[in-house]
Image (tube, rainbow, N blue to C red; front, side, top):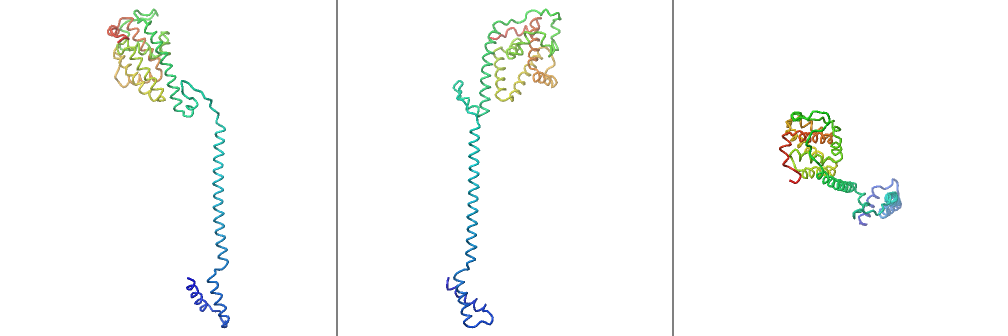
Length: 286
């Protein structure tokens, strides 16, 4: 490699000989060219050194930025941990509440199940007492109103907003709607009391666990049995208008709908309507 450089240097020295130079000048010029060919100028070394220095400086700067970002992230995590309130070790029924609060969904389901379990237990106690002491109507109420079989056919005897006409029935429909709804189905001969109560409670729990999505199925079942009660008394049923009316009734005021149905069947028992006569054979034990 050095021989090739030497040859190239001699050729260049011969071609680029200074004008008017003597033999000794020519030899001096040639030696200078050869020396420069073997040893690149100092400027090139300086430029390379500067480039290398700039590269090292850039790498160092990037490393410093990366270290600063890492330090900032660690500081933020430490601040977050310090700002979070410490959860005490609270346990209910063997379940760590502090762990549940970190997962909103799990906490919601836990509280929903706890509430549903309490409600079901209370309903079962009240349902047992209700079944034991409840007596079906046998004579019309002494309220000054007319009570006949004909008034029950083809229409609802009482308005949806007339639930306060029978205050005890109104209260049971509001505070324990599942009980009154199940008892209405029993009296109408559509379903046994405990089956009806189980359906109502199951749909209620499903609605709670699905954050309200199960309400579609809940309302659908309630409307289905309301349509069947319509058919028993010859009230318009099966049409889009009647179904839409029942959906809106249960969606807007379900307790009032349950009270209206209950008053209809109670009065049917009081005046001896055929619906009552045909359904007396079905009781809560079947």
